[in-house]
Each structure stands twice: as structure tokens, then as C-alpha cells.
Image (cartoon, rainbow, N blue to C red; front, side, top):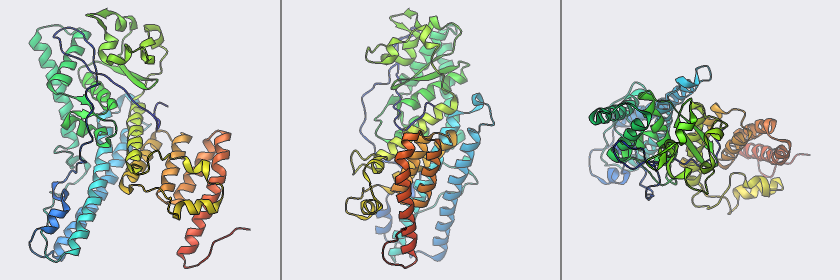
Length: 443
């Protein structure tokens, strides 16, 4: 499979010279991490809400807040179901919409974040006697009506349609034919000159969602590739891609690969789409020829969705463990020798301080990726370790036990003693929750 938690995808953009192919590069100036956004303006500043003077919160108002909490939960559940249906293995891969799959991922995560923010806001409201009551949004019937940065999922799909129409208008204005190189040139002009799309810092997980990329023009490299694929699809051009080393390369599907490498105006068509990385001697992409290109494994739509999810896992984990620099998911597997040490590492002063919301978002991304790759043992191991860090020991034992069934023998041998000790830790936690004291021992 192409997707894994250590994946780093690279894409590129183009400059703009009318009617001539040119290098497409995504290596714009890296931006600093922007402030994390919220979908709903009434919970942006809880401090302002509770500091303003207004009428006392009534039971009806608190009940209405409970209704919206349930709404967020239902939206998150529906978004997961819609995502699962979109990438179902019962449907043909070519029929999967990359845009819809990514928007359902965003909808679930935003509903989860908004649920947590609403809970925090309501907790502060309960603590104050006289507070202003923030307005609530209009209720939605389903996830399709949920606003994502001001637009519904259908609205963002329509945004991609509009970009394709702008490309068509650009081609008409030039009064030129529909040669592939000319179409790619027009796509580059619209995306990177008119729309101003550019690559942003890969350390910001919020730049890994399709709707924020389309609304701000900043996003990670794989999103740029996905938008390129989606726009070309609307123009009748099939774009395929493959992972090559640290890069994810895309190119127009053609029965004559030689034409992709034919140099005109100083650049090949392959360089137009993938840019600087194919000309960088340090990149494996620079060694590709029309012959070796045929030997690459083409990524399916499910693979590409998996790459986007792998990026989310990596970025959310990085945010979750930001205060513990260099913390690895698998660190406890290598260092804990006894159950006593495992208990001490969790309850002692050296326990890693993780951000619970970002950890949960990483787990959610991992759950979706497991739907795509249920037999990926390393992914299931990482998922089990995230559950361990979240102190959901029962679920962690279950996932790691399944992992051992698929893992290579040497990895299973590393996992087995850890799972046994974690199982004892789970039993001890249950023992103490019943009011017993002392340490549970097994003879």
C-alpha cells in the first residue's frame, strides 16, 4: 500500500507564460502555523461570552445547547458512514470521488472539534450566574447541510466545478485548440496565478483539509495533487500518480509515455506537472524515463485517500506530542521490561503530556485508514499504541493482539510481552476501580 504514517508527499506548481508549457512548482515560501479555526463563530471566544453581561441562562437555553451537542454527534456519525460508503470496496475505484471522501473526513473532524468547544462553552456558562448566551446556528438535517468554512459539501464540490469552468474560459479566450500541453498550461495559470494556490507549512494539520485549502489557497502537497486531479477529471483528462521515494508524482494518462518526456520550451510535460523534483538530481524522480515510468505502481483513488489520511495521522500526532519532542508511538515497546515499569511510566512524573483533542483526531484518522487497509499490521500497531497513550487499555490490547496475527514474527515477538503486561495493567485498573487496594498479581 502507498499510505503509511511516515509518508511525505511532494508536488509542484507552474509559472505563467501563455500558451507554453513550463515548470509547475509547489515550493512557495512556507507559511507560519495559522491559528486553528472553528466552524462556528459563536464559540470562537468563550472568554468574551462569559465576561459580557446579559440575562441568566435558562433551563430552556441549556436544553437547546444539549440539542446541538447531539447534533454534532449525529453529524460526526453520519460523516463516518458517508466516508465508508464512498470508499466502499463494493464500488469501482474509478467511481470514488476524492473530493467527497476528503470533505467527509473534514466534516467529521470539525463536528468533533465543535462538540468539544461547545462543551467547554457550556461548562463556563454554568459557572456564571449572569452571562450572555451565544446564538446557535440553524439546525441541519444531515451532514450534507453542515457548513464548512461557509459552504456545504455540495458547495465545495461546486467550487471545483467553477475552477474547471475558469480553465475552459481561459482556453476559449486564447482561441487555441485543446492540445494537452495547452490545457495543462491553462490549468496552471488558473490554479497558481488566478487562484493563488500554494503549498503551506506541512506542520499545520489544518492545512490538510480540502475545504480549508480551497478557501485559503494554502494546503499541503497531496491536496494540491488531488485538486489537480479533480480539475483535470472535469476537463476530461485522466491524471494518474504514484509514490516515488519521498515524492508523489502525477502525470496525464497516455498511451505514448515518450511524449511526456519530450522537451519543449525548456521543459518536458512531465516536468510541467511535477516541476522541480524531476530536475533535482537528489530526487529519485529525476531518474525516471518513459520506460521506467511504466514500471511504477499507479495509485488508486483509495490509495490517494489513504495518503491524505496518513498525513493527518502524522500531523495530529505531532501536535498531540508537541510538548514531548521526539516522542515515538513505539517507544514503550522497546524500553518497558516489566509490568511494574509499565505502570510507573504511566502514573509516574515522566508520563508524556499529550494534547487529548489532537490525539483523538489522530485516532479518528487511523480508524478511517484501517477501513481502507484492515490488514496493515504496522498501521494497526500504531493505532493500538495511540489507544495506549489515551489510556484506553482494553481497546489497545484488542488492536495490538490483532496486529500480532498479521505482523512478521520478529515484530510479534516484540509486541507479545508488551501486550501481556498491558493486559495485566488493564486488569489492575479494573480491580482498583472496584474499590480494591494493592497490586493485582498473577501466579
